[in-house]
Length: 394
Image (cartoon, rainbow, N blue to C red; front, side):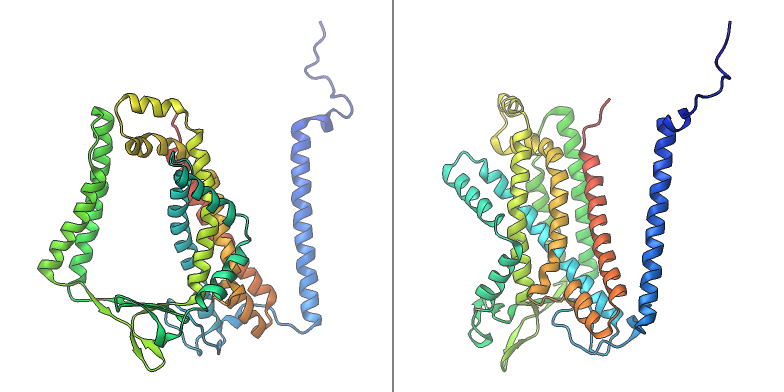
């Protein structure tokens, strides 16, 4: 009896092995990418030397020499380009954070409203979605900026809201809080209250799963977050000192100001992204079997409780993945701020700093890295949450 265990491999069989071919193609691809990158790097270095352009990041230490309309940290014209980068980064994060929060709330309400049995509410939500998701975001930004906010009256004819809020063509002026001597105690009490509410929520969930009894968590949490800090204020005094804006000369002094560029950009991105989020919410709710609703009704649950405890938790598993894409789009669409001069990363760093220094490669590389880091951070956070709410198989 002859064995073929040690028989010579037929000619060409080594290359016909799928695993060998897979590794070979991967190695070839990596070598090609590295070679292309090395060629581009060498070519770029040669061109820079030929034109007498000095590469590097030393320019970040040079003085900027220009002012910025909005900065969340202290900034003067004598500060460095590195400080300008930080100002632009914070302004970008501010717009992205506010836009994501507001778009999530508005989109969720619109998605639920479109499924409402009320004909008028459903049609109004449909009209909103079909209009605003089909208009380019840049046009919406330009509309709110030029046609709405810049068309407001000047500071002397400001729209007065309770003599503490003033809206005019230069922005929205509002009171600015500052810490007082009792702020530390108040902050500790608020933090302890939040921790207590989280613990109460976990207890209420375990109690509901064990007995089926629903604890009024929402109203109890609202009562705790109002009553306990309120008693702290009565005992220890006001934890905040407010600076109210006052009209001095031709403009307001004191308080905070939200410039028109920030308001227009935030409002446009919120309205635009909320239309897409609403469709994600609607599809997620419709993906839940109607039998879940019927089972909840058979148990005597009210429609609001059914939506909050039965439908939404299951719909989130369908909503979260496309919702992540909308958050990423909003963060990237914030770069459209350059169209109205809002001082974000693109307008400040990839615009003014690039024009002044001529360090195009370094500036664009830093800007691209920042947006990449923001997008990856959002993706990691949403993927973590998606895994947390995913069904656990036994």
